[in-house]
Image 1 (tube, helix red, strand yellow):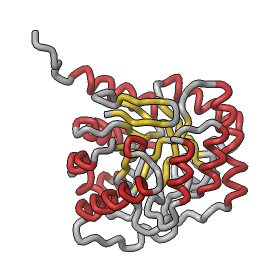
Image 2 (cartoon, rainbow, N blue to C red; image 1 turned 30 degrees about the horizontal axis):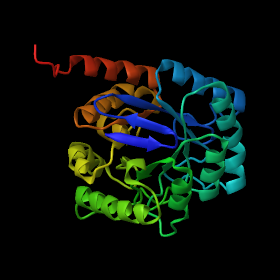
Image 3 (cartoon, helix red, strand yellow; image 1 turned 90 degrees about the vertical axis):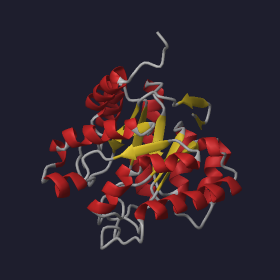
Image 4 (cartoon, helix red, strand yellow; image 1 turned 45 degrees about the vertical axis):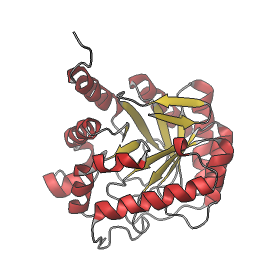
Length: 282
């Protein structure tokens, strides 16, 4: 399967890829404040690239549960210098993690090639028109509600069916706004307006999303579902569970794993790939 991001064509068939998370925020749930100045943020991006990250996802607004929204000017102040420096110092592709159209536009102008949109449930098509204009890759994530209220008693009749239908309708609307289907990647949104049972149902049903015709990304790194299920309270101690989910996801055809822990995830997926049966006829 080919995924197109600006001038890049990604052949995702059978190749594990990792997206490194770079939060330039003071309040993200596990690394808030760690990379809130430009030199440290860029150093972290280069470190993740050196560890094998295929792309770096830069975010200037926390989307953890109960997060306080950030205004456009502040988000731009946080992300643009970082994106410009990563692009200047490295060839690693940059993704902008944002819900705001103007932030996406200015990030793409600064050299980002992907928009990671946690608010793909849009009524205004201007984000999609911006993605179409730049030919950027677009990651459409499912979220019930918004970060301020998404974990307040989320409800579904059937979470898998409803997320599938959300993507079916969304892909049609994106294409009507000029986005080509080969630009679109889907993220079921683990932890975004879902209970533990909803998250587990989606993880078990990942293969159901392939018939939509778009590659899949999974982000479970350090998520609170591991606290609810395994009683691991410190987000930084949830790596083993995240690696298990990454290998599970890759076995079910997910193309990209989004993670804070790049080196460990690259190593785990490399071993997973080495153990897969060879397709050669010996």
